[in-house]
Image (tube, rainbow, N blue to C red):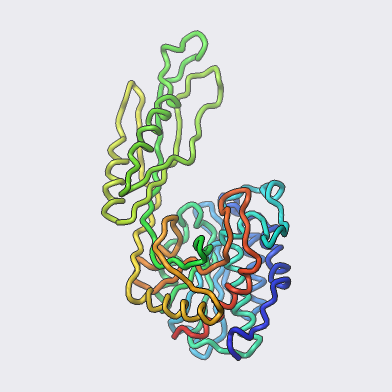
Length: 376
């Protein structure tokens, strides 16, 4: 049977995907992420996979690894790598509920990246039901912490990737529906200002505000953005009493560069901001980093297969390097052929308008099924 003849059904996929979206799974809520892993583990087991639950660490949820029966079980094959954590806190469903409107389906995490993960499982399900054995064995790995840079599972992903020949990452498709064949480098930083407390009413001049110092530092950091490297401050925490001059302020910074050398220079600039100004101490520490992944011959060979499959389905699959990190940064940087962003089409990821294009469910299931049957 040709992969195009597999009986993918949009309504069936929507019904299966809905419980995944109703199970909110923000990264920092380990119990919520583990509930989501339960749903995925059941789905994978029902398809026939051998399931392994991997405990979480560093305060994050656990992971699920699933291996499917194959005549070459245990030999290098295809790794489908995805994450089941989202940026949306519990309660986001009240603001962006599951709903279908004008050919779109809405919900937190549906585009990034529960939709693509679910579609991948559906592709495997239909291949198994049709009795089609893929040329290579398949492993699926779902992890809990991609949205914060994968601090607890990077080694797990990299080691699993090294055991396989090819990595497929069903992150959301690019705006034009295209795939990603390379990703820019990303670094995270923690910035802390430590001031001097005082009563904000009768002894204001005796204090040194950590918040005011951080405000000035934020403007300085974001002014460092250029064509080679960008800097943005996304999180700030400070203060407890309005009548107290703040003694501490914490911020998180993200920088991105197309080339590793540019990111390395950006890291030097950020770390150089540490010091003391007006009796306020500034401390900059480096957080997790995603390396540059540049497309190589192996990745482009996988893309060529994917483009051929897409052509049979009826659309042209473009490709490009992209900003916004994924776990494809790690596998691609290792030199393992990696094809990223082959998940569902949609828009609004990380916002209260996150949605997918419903007609992309069958399209992307066919794309995944075609890849799994053609890659050798």
